[in-house]
Amino acid sequence: MTEYTKASKWPVLDENGIHVGDIIRQHGSTLWCLQRKGMDRPFKRNIRSLEQAKALAMAYPQVWGGANFDLRRSLIRTCVWCVILASLFALFLPL
Image 1 (cartoon, one colour):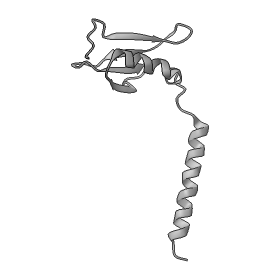
Image 2 (spheres, helix red, strand yellow):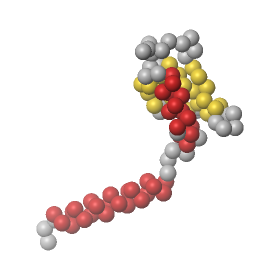
Image 3 (tube, helix red, strand yellow):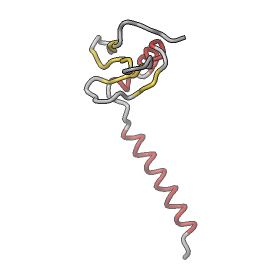
Image 4 (cartoon, helix red, strand yellow):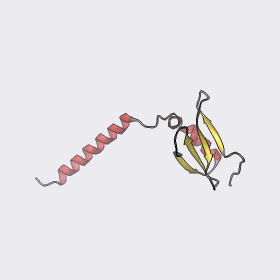
């Protein structure tokens, strides 16, 4: 069922009541997107209903706060991939 509402922009507030972004209806469609305050482009698009968009907004509060990048996890994954690639090169390079 397609949802039609008069509002095309819903504010997203954090637990302190501070505006952190918006749920916006995409232009020319019935799809919704999530946009963090201060960003030029949405970080999630093509959400089918307003309820799904609200559920996603509530499920990932770290994204709204800008804390979705974990440097430690990124470095660990990079090191693991470097070790894997180095071992593959060591196996297939002739001595």
